[in-house]
Image (cartoon, rainbow, N blue to C red; front, side):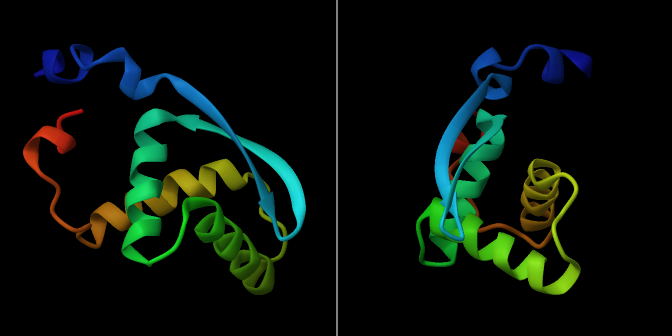
Amino acid sequence: MCHVFAGQDPERYACRTRRLRLNGQSTSIRLENSFWAILDELAASEGMSTPCFISKLHAEVLELRGEPSNFTSLLRCACLKFLELGAPQRPAAVAAE
């Protein structure tokens, strides 16, 4: 069983930093490539770009709860929630990346 997890492509868990604006302020967010792929899919399912989606999410969190103590963790959990809610089915080749 562990071979399924240990044998995955290292590119999946390599980190990438993206620069974007959160509610008008320039910032950078560092996440694993797998999470960026899910965020891209999530944003597309909402009909917006990833930076726009992340900025909107940040604004909504600010309104509901105030400044999050760890926004990147919130983004990772948003990805998990998206998958739990039944993200649109992806082709097997894309899901395996």
